[in-house]
Length: 189
Image (cartoon, rainbow, N blue to C red; front, side, top):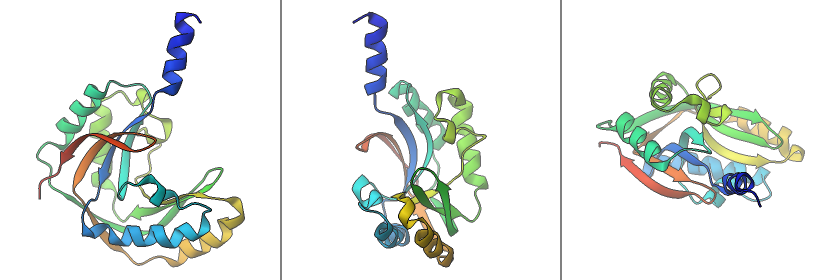
């Protein structure tokens, strides 16, 4: 195998890294309840299978040095207090399988944080759906709903309009799958 072929194979096997805002406290309960309800539309409960708490993903990178990821997370989130986010309803992404997610009622602060991350790390390195011009702030509820359950799942989502607040208390730099926390920045109480 040529050196170029070996490096390409290594790149294909490399797990992606992400910067995520997570909730590891009792305020996560409304999201976990939605996970349980929405899982009935999936053959395997996707969010439970992650074995990771409710979160919002700011950026995903295939090819970045972990030290650069850590430096950005520490720079952007140094001395930042826990972030309380009100969610207003459920949105969806119409991929091969339907993805349901909780929509922040006001995403301006999340977009400012997202911009700060991408001001520090070239957006071209980020997965296209997480770049500043494509990113939709969201907290995933179910990510593998088959076409056969789509209509029923969307009807369920349309009925779920009660707002709730989740307090996110940490930033994780992770690799996945499976989710592995490689660095954490605790937000101030």
